[in-house]
Structure formats: structure tokens, C-alpha cells
Image (tube, rainbow, N blue to C red):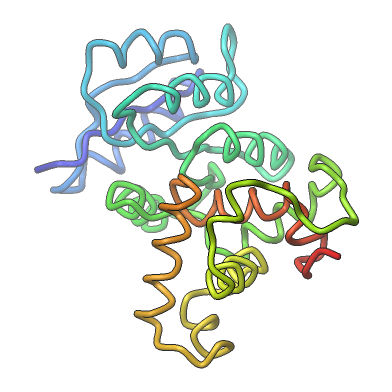
Length: 225
């Protein structure tokens, strides 16, 4: 079954370019388009979509707020925020709003297609190291704390799960975490899955955001005090 994609961008030429790339793929089809966030919400009420490619700067309703409203709905499609180098703060806001990741608008077609497939399968688009750099850059947007992180959901984690969560937040991949803790990669994957379940998080992008917000890690990717 094809991945049903929606394009949301106020620039018709950009939507046309993305549509041409996606149309050439046997496992994808563009089933809807919209020129702003409000139109996107309206179209989604009547159209089944798996993945939304969402621009951030649009009239009427921007991509961040549109993403927040989409992701608040039950059974919502996955959202990939599209941004440019000078709009990374929008990407950060988009991740907090519920997007499964972000990409630059000039991303090579192969990477765009891979991202859509990854998000559709349940993974996050953003690599852990990229997420860390993004959050480090915009650390002033996050709460500052010098105390032991206090977040009731974190109490549900075992010591090992907290250890794994800290390393995820520092940008390590499952393989790197396995090597650091002398565990199998499969075991690390199991721990990450339990962390997501216990904290009711969608993916490791949200793990990183929560770790920064609670003070588990500080700007620079190191452990919090």
C-alpha cells in the first residue's frame, strides 16, 4: 500500500517540485495539498493521510500551530517540518508541537524520500546528534535548572532506563549506547522502547526534549547537576 503524503506550503512551485519527486516513487502518492495551515486542517478532515510535509512560514496559520493541532487529534498523520537554515527555531518549536522530525527544504531527494519512509514506519527523522545540536543552539528557550530534575514521569524509570535516557539525550545512537553500557544493541532498543512507553513519548526526539526540559541534561549535551 502506498504512503499517502500531503504537501503543505504556500509556494506552488515548491509543492510542484516535491510532487514530481514523490510521484516517481512506486510506494508513495500525493493525495492532498494545501497552501496554509488552516486549509491543511480542513483538507485533513476529509482525506486520509499518512505523512504531512509541513512548511513553517505560511499565511493564516503557520506550520508550527498547524502541526500542534494536527498532532492533538487521535490517529493523526506523521508530520515532517520543512525549514531553512535561518528558521531552525521554528523546527525546534515544530518538534515540541509533535512533529516527527524536520528537514531543510533543499534536502536531496533521496534523503527526503528516506525520511518519509522512516517517519511512516514509526521512526524519527532527526538523527540524535542533529537533535542535540539543535537543542544546544536553542537551549535558552528551555527551562533552566541547577537542581536534581523533578518530573513525576521520570520516577517510573528504572536506574538503567534513566541511564539509557541520559545517553539518548546526549545524542548517542543505540549502537553507541550499547558500547558505552556494555549491552547488546537489542537490549538498548528494548530499554528505549520502555522509556517511550512509560513516559508516553512518541520517539527519541521527544526523549531529548523532555530530558532538556526537566534538567536531566544541560546545554552542551552533558548531564544536569
